[in-house]
Image (tube, rainbow, N blue to C red; front, side, top):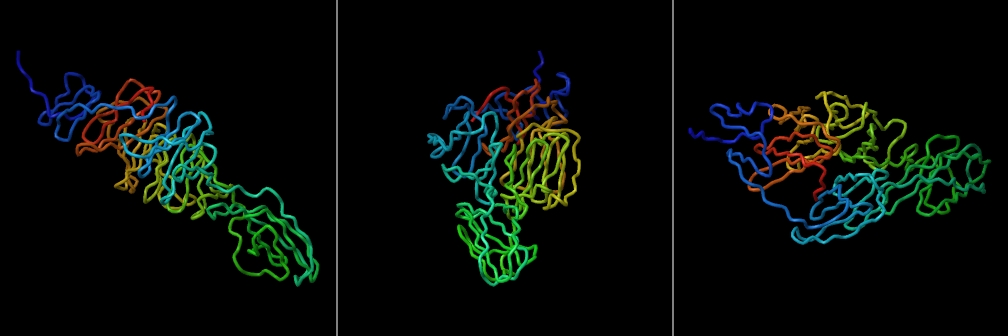
Length: 404
């Protein structure tokens, strides 16, 4: 019997017939690769095993941030801290909405996450709502004496959160003041009051609650900058870029005001797509979005950005990943792993060799070991085909399994 040497190995290929996996002068593909690494040298070695460090009943939404990590288990949000071998588990909150995944992002050093309903801030083991609710009680206004000219005045106020963030303004209240009149305005604590000049439409800061007295004209100073703004809603995916938070919720992309990441204008700060947004990954020059198709949105202002279709197919929900060391993102598409950069270029690195089945949701992680960098994809509701395992790409689909 003739001995036929195999190698170097080129990775996995389920498109070629079994009899044509050899490529002349290059090496050999394999039909399947399970629990092995195909190295850049074309060799194959077994992967290291796994050790369970933390148990749970319904674990999901794992996210690493600095020396800590967070994950959900049912209605509980946990923080993992300490060493990798013996992590300490700390309960952060026990009232997560059930049936919803969490989405995290680093906002210039501040950890923000969405529970599907609201945006929250994480500081160590403390979770607090990030956005400040708009006041819902009208100010109590009393006409007094003073030096105000007679006419119509507008009054509004905002709430101030523990981190100094300001809410959207209460809808302005109009009040008629006689000549030589004044205003006494009663509002809740931790608020800022704004009043317009006589018959004016701009409102200026006049003092902090709970009681503010206005007896002289207010025709200058700090203007109210949060009129008609509301708290940015929570959603399925949250990302930060250039002073704005972006939230994907179903088929709608909401984006905050610039440098006011907790506030948005419900009259215009949103975009609607044909289907649910499954991937939302900002990059220096724009944003990659995947819904029914794959879109590139260059620029820094979503309201003015052009939406460019780059691929005619979608992706697994939650599979987006941003590389920590280069201006590049990745996700698990309906046809395999995709890599995209800031020029608007996207490449499906698996489609030529591997047929993959579309999946409903998934996650992608970057693994670095023994000098190799690999992308690993795990998915739910997976089909039968596996993704490639070659050089720095390795994306075997793990079916119906939650791994921490």
